[in-house]
Amino acid sequence: MRIFVGNFAFTTTKDELRQLFEAYGNVEQVRIITDPETGRSWGFGFVEMPDATAAQAAMASINRRGVGGRTLSVTEARSGGRRARMTSDGRGGKDGSPAKPRRPQRRHHRHQGVSIVQPSTHVSSKGAVCFVDAQPPS
Image 1 (tube, helix red, strand yellow):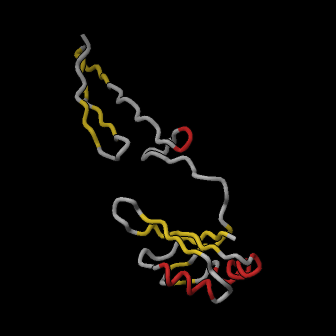
Image 2 (image 1 turned 135 degrees about the vertical axis):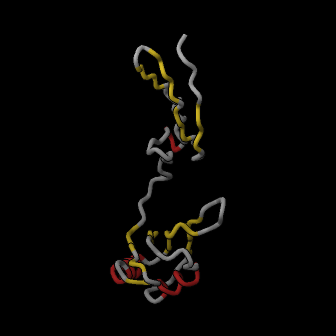
Image 3 (image 1 turned 90 degrees about the vertical axis):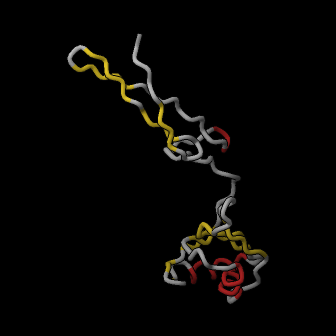
């Protein structure tokens, strides 16, 4: 059975998770999810236990337990592949691909008959803030 373990300290190691779950039965695999760029833990992972009864006992006992100053969240892992990735503004693309960034909108303000154009900002798909200088209408 595959078990989701969330909200553990970023410094938690695979061996620490393995020891925590081995008290309830055999552990086949422990996987901590990390940031691909920095290698730093994202604070969640998965534990695989071959015996479903032992896995249920482990989940019931370890869920909401305080470990390393944090309260663990332990549930049965959901099956079904990858979820759609979300961009910084909460929009997800199709089939797990990132959404295309929106084009910045020009904002025109009229003040006493004079068109004033304000530059707008745009957050790229990589999180960088771009300043876009808009041209006055012709």
